[in-house]
Length: 147
View 1 (tube, rainbow, N blue to C red):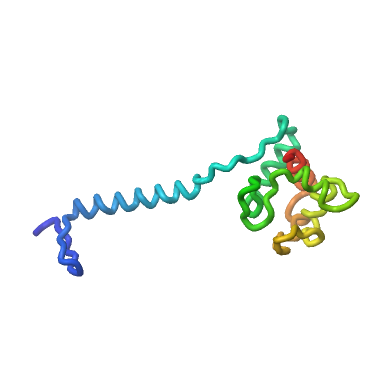
View 2 (view 1 turned 135 degrees about the vertical axis):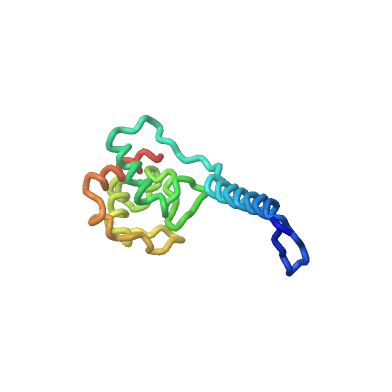
């Protein structure tokens, strides 16, 4: 019969209209699943206590582009590296007699110097070559807003 597709394994006959209808439903279902996976988190991202300066905004953009694939800003989410929520406070306590700014900068420039317990030495060590000094300073400034 014209307009029918035979599916012989199951002894069913489906019209081309029904076949297209099922195909559209499958595609929509798959898109829905992708959407839910991509947008499924409801975790709060820490917000700075004040409006960001121009430098901090630049740091936020660089962080999003260069760091967010491995570092979450939520304490409840671990991607590859440690979450950075509250890093401004945590960094000040990580190494005796070292302030948060120095700790964060050292961790970016020489990531193997201070490995957070429970994490491996997986952070790239080439940010000093990949980013400008201005971009690195901006990322540090941004991270210092995350108390």
